[in-house]
Image (cartoon, rainbow, N blue to C red; front, top):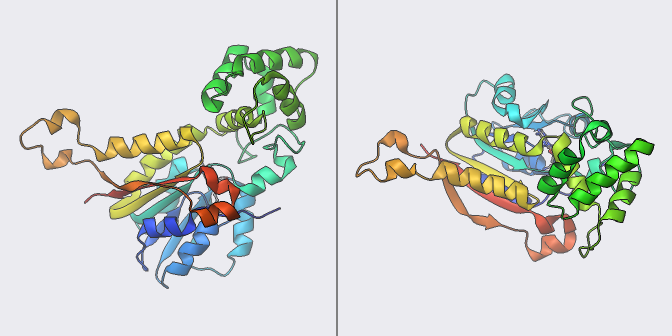
Length: 308
Ligand SMILES: C[S@@+](CC[C@H](N)C(=O)[O-])C[C@H]1O[C@@H](n2cnc3c(N)ncnc32)[C@H](O)[C@@H]1O
C-alpha cells in the first residue's frame, strides 16, 4: 500500500546528464524512486534536495533513507523551490531539477486521503492535509457556475454542467462528504463511457487539481527551477495528462525562443538570449515499462537546458 513505481526512471536520469559531484533537486519526492536512482549515480560529493508537500511522503522517505547523508529531504511546496533549496545548502544554483507531477500511488491507495473514486473515504484530496480546504468543504459552498467551471476546465468533462447541478441539488438535502457518494453521483450524470475509464475519473482529477492548485504550483515551480539552474543545468519534467503537458511545453517554448520583436533586429543584444534551450522531443515509456506499469501509459517527459 505504501509503494509507488516510478516512471521513466532511466530516461529521467539520462535527461539530467548527471555530474557525480553535482547538486540536484527532486521537486516531487513521492516515495523516492527517482531520488534513489539519482543517488546511485552520484558520487560521494553529490547532493540531492528532495521536496514533497505531503507529510506522509517525507515520513516514508526519512525511514527509507535514514543513513543517506547526501540527501536533504524537505517538506514544502515546489512553488517555493528556490527558498527551500537555499535553506538546505550553501549553493545558489543547482545542476538539475526533476519534476514528476501528479499524485503518488500511496495517496490514491489510502482511502482515508479521499483521492479515490473506487475506495470510499472522506472527500478530501489534499496532498498536504494540514493546508487548504478538503473538497467536501469547497463543494458545500461553491456556486453551480464555479463547480461547473472547475470540472469543465480542469477535468475537460463534457457533462460538467449536469454534474454541477446535481451536486447543488444533492447537497441541499445532505452534505457530500464521502468519495463514494460523489463517484456515484457523477456516474449518474456521465452519459457516455470512455473505454477503461471510471466515469468519475475526470471529475476527481479536476477537483484534486483545484484544491491543490496544481497548475498554479506547476507554473511557479517551473519559474523557480529556472532561477535555480546553473548554466548547463537540466530541467526535466514528467507529466501525466494533457493540461500538465501543455503547461510544461508552453513554459519551455516561451523561455527558449527569442522575443519576436528582438528577433527582427539585425543583431539582437546578448541580453535578449532566451534562458533555456529545448533538448530533444517529448519522450514516452517503452514497451517493457508499459507492460510492467500501466500508469506509465500517459507519462510524457520533456527536457530543457539552462543557457550560459
Ligand atoms: C507522481 S508523485 C512522485 C513520485 C516519485 N517520483 C517517486 O518516484 O516516488 C508526485 C509527488 O509530488 C508531490 N507534489 C505534488 N505537487 C506538489 C507541490 N506543489 N509541491 C511539492 N510536492 C508536490 C505529491 O505529494 C506526490 O508525492
